[in-house]
Length: 231
Image (spheres, one colour):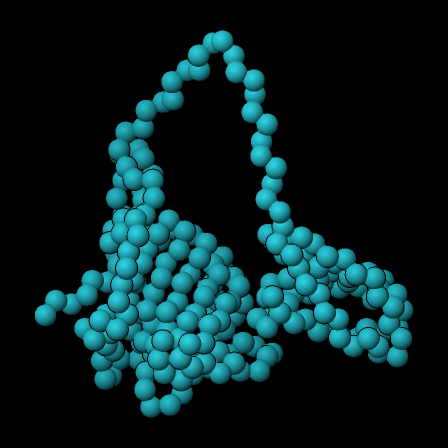
């Protein structure tokens, strides 16, 4: 699991984070006793006591469990006095919401569902012969943005400061490049989850464009979605 914080105390100290493969390497560990704390939002923290002798053990497997839901709040006892009416909110002052078509409107509290045929969309919106990159916003909600990325050139190293990214390969060949890690090959059906703040690049390999579905989660989307071309 990526993004797990590992706090080390004892003969040596330090704080580390697991990579995209859920692995963390603890360098320069001296022989001695250690206390390890594994934490990630939404999961129950795990503690381990470790005694290291002659570099053994060299591998530790840890499994985090999903944290139980919080206890429901205790509601106050009903009173005989009626509660004051809630203040009215005019459409002009209401926060913007995103419709199923991707347009931002007011007076709605949530986005509606939208279904897109990727095959039909690509038939009408395929990347041009000289375009290095074509980005199409397919879905837009109050918490995420879903894009279709068509790459003829590599996507340079970048990071999403506060957004988690999920990549799913629809067609083509390529690689996910994360600094200090081996390149991860990408092919049709590959799924990659990149935590916020992790720098990464995407390479295209082979003769055909690399086509990916990218979902950025963690903030509202206020973009117009790309319509399908009409015949």
